[in-house]
Amino acid sequence: MLAHRYNLRRRELPIEQEDNQQQRPLTTIMTDPVIRAFESIKSFHGTVQDNSRDWCDSADIIFNALNINDGDRLARIAIKFEDTAFDWYRDNPGPYTTWLAFREAFQRAFPPPERTQNRHLLSEQINQRKQGPDGSVHDYYYSLDKLCREYDPKMSPIDKTIKLVCGLRDELKEKILPLNVQTPEEFMTHAKNFESSEKVMAQQR
Image (cartoon, rainbow, N blue to C red; front, top):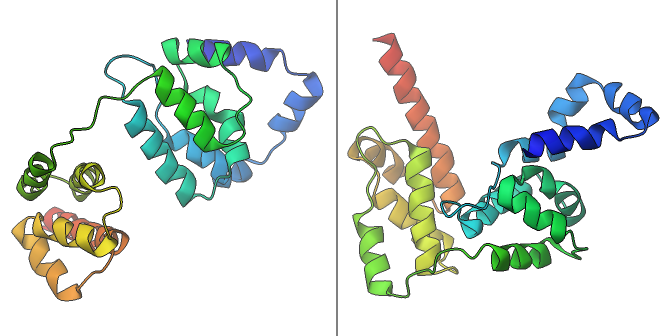
């Protein structure tokens, strides 16, 4: 539905503006960090299955990684809304002075599920979270990262890294432990490299 409305808007653009857009080199479009960021963010529909907090957290990670400023975020975020979420934004377009102000209004409109306040339960879930034999490093990392943020939003990088290493499957853990990784980012880089090497070796057998 949003794509249809977005196409309608494009047809209303002045011809000169559309011509300028068509003249943009393909390489520029492909390397433009703003375009890359928004292509990486999934659409938000506003259904009961959608979690606004997780969606915003994911968008924040992508925006921060590509150094997207608040102005560019706010100017284009509506293209990621569908259905009920699009209707809400149409009725509440702002202006929002900062991305944080938008995020707060957005999460008030689509309240995320309450985080459990039982830290004993969260700690147990963290300790029990293990990477399965066929589980990817990507899925394992983000599921455990989410639990750690709920348990302690200010958890130190080294504490989170220790928990990430502890839950790895044995083959990867044996390779990561000697590296003495200190941050989640460092953990992710090494773990994914080892995972990729394993896949290459498996294909060559």
